Length: 366
Image (tube, rainbow, N blue to C red):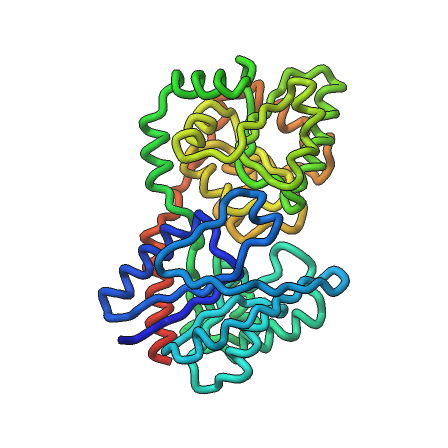
């Protein structure tokens, strides 16, 4: 039987439906999927979203820090070397990517990831390594169109590029939103200790990439203005302590990691969703719930921000706490804003799986 291995730094909970469906699609063609994954970092574990699954094989993660860079020395080569194809992270710091592309010339190797340097300035050395990976890989799996265009501009032919259209499984959230009532929201918020007044929602991990310190500063400014704006925070992470002053002042309610039904209850009652830091898959939540996203023009958002349109589904403020606070205040006092916006159809897991499946077949045939 044909075997394809995908190497991942770790597998978050939201990836389980994707790999489940991809494994099923490949199995119908006699192809076995193996996902070889390292362990979640301390920051990732703090989010509470790491997971395991039958198709996953765990390897011990080895990461060292050199100044501001994290080098992944995790070596899973013995697990994927006899596969018919392997898909590795597109990372200049990934030992698996280097060995797959550099030491296995006969093995069809694909690279998967952002492809373009969305979320941080590109270290010159990493940039050279990642361009080499793009040139040598048999196939490139880009999260979003911006990453695919980046690969084209560096000489990768269209036939070797798959735009995955990265997403989460939205079917459960869609159903939960349809079934959720205002009473469900009221009951959930009462159990959580939230006050009865208009609010905006924060959905996701609470760590440095989301700029929780910036959010705390914005809430402090709103407090100084005697604003009644409130934030319901659905998530957890290493930086959640930064919101303790806002919680003590009654400006924020932390409800922790939430399941789909709780997320639907929070979103249905919110006037908007906010995230001053890295906007990623929360963009999909916003499209499904038809709630505008408030963020800033900070340059390091993740690829999925491409799903949103500035001035329409996303409110983009200057990158300072005062402007962000202004946007929160306006949103709380204009709860019908979402009805005036244009809402494109959210991406689907079926489409993502179909895209990745097609790219995998192209890789096997390369």
